[in-house]
Image 1 (tube, rainbow, N blue to C red):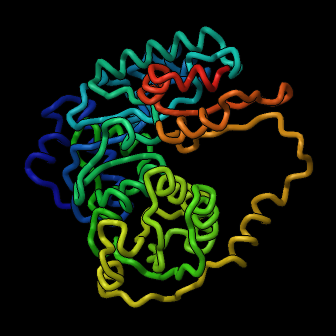
Image 2: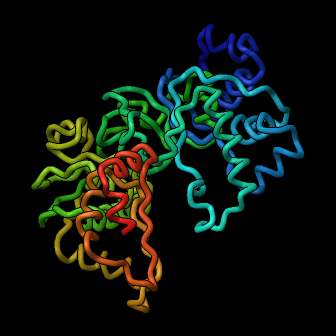
Length: 362
């Protein structure tokens, strides 16, 4: 890989052993990907806290939270002091809700260990957002901005809806980017990879959140990791619909970017979305495809008695919480069922101050 003088200095230890370890990881990673250089990033989303019994035991045996960060964030068996981050860095979701450990079967010991870990992450300069939807609570990169994000539903939203640029990173590469402001220049950082390669022609209205989820699930199964161009969009989808669509497509397949012609920033026209490519195939999506998808995702259902309902994957917007509160007001969840709604901690605070939390809990 071609390195700048600044990158060589970081690699050679000028900024300390942790940064040198991070540069070594990024160079190995980039060479494995076939990248010829690194690209500068000032926006990183990853995971740095520790929430599991395994990591707790590892910390106790190997040298504390520095050992956890070295091994699991920098791929280094040598324990080095954890540095402060250089890039604006946001922490993604946890493995549990520390405010409801009993309901989630988590011991108080693990909660206390997590709190220590979160305090350490905050000292690093990491924003403790604790959400898979950082774009809802303050981390909104601009079009063309190079990012290093984890979390498949966040990545597809970042690329497609915001027009920023990121691949789906892992804990190690994202953490290395936090302390170096670098990530390999390949994939969705490059223009040629972002162009559409195949098409979808909508032959029915896609309007509700459920509609967009079903459409995304159908599309992801077919598209996998290619870049689809969707024509025929009627009503412009809002944030919850785009969030749900991208999450479904990245779950059933590996979609990291899509173009909605006339809606998303790099698809003002069909020609712009394809960028000179000719679609390898174009498929229709209509009532038949929707019905088949609905049947397929419900095929394992054998009982209408539901004991647990989880909403908020990806995390609910304040609009979705408002909708849930309106639907639940004056009604009761069945005594044999549990309803959990997941949302960013910042949005939970707004919901509580507005009264939605109380309506839902009642």
